[in-house]
Length: 311
Image (cartoon, rainbow, N blue to C red; front, side, top):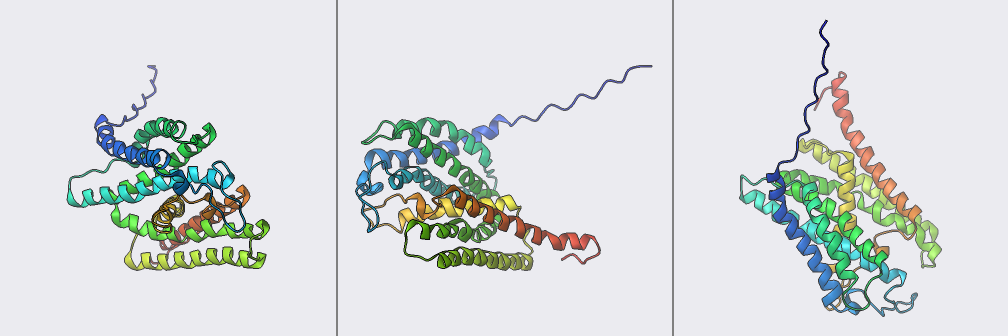
């Protein structure tokens, strides 16, 4: 009896070289923008203006180059740079996609992968060598990690802006609902740090922000049903909230909420919690909001399959 040979599994599909070549100019542009911003902030601009050396408040002594507050400004620069990419790249690719009917936007992950090498080399090369003081290796690594982490959703947003601009706008509206949980949950830390706010007020701010986000998600769900817009997956909603909270708003703070002569980089405490436990709580609440609203939006569809009337 002849033996039966197992079927040979198909060879994995390799990404075409043309796709990588198409992504290369965009990746080169984004890497140049990020490295150009880092070079300006760390090598050209006045460090006293960009990172607020010597800045004083009523509760804090004059800021030093490597105290906790100033150190956080260095790696926040990576998120501000990624925020500039988020806005600029999405706008540029979106416009090209509208004007050029045959334009195929490069995949966001390819753009990110091509940017990773230059940033891994370029950001440490700048921050470790230029101006005074140069950064220690740990802070240079933090700057690089922040820029790379922020560039991932920025590159994905660019892909959506060209291929699915309407879906991107709706997703951004959903993501706004997560901003209060991601940025206001840190209020519960403030009474323990001697700031003039009571614990009930702090919890009121935190929980009120969560409730406001839930209300906004309910409004968006109604609008999506009315306009018959498909609901995005929970990870997409969460990523949109993270990008708006930690990329877009730090960029807005840098450009708008600072004096014209002192376009400084914000400190991390304006957007992130001091303690990892509170930050984890904020992320968990935002993830629960994204997952919960996705589950609720999918219920009418499943009900329709079991005898309900689909809409």
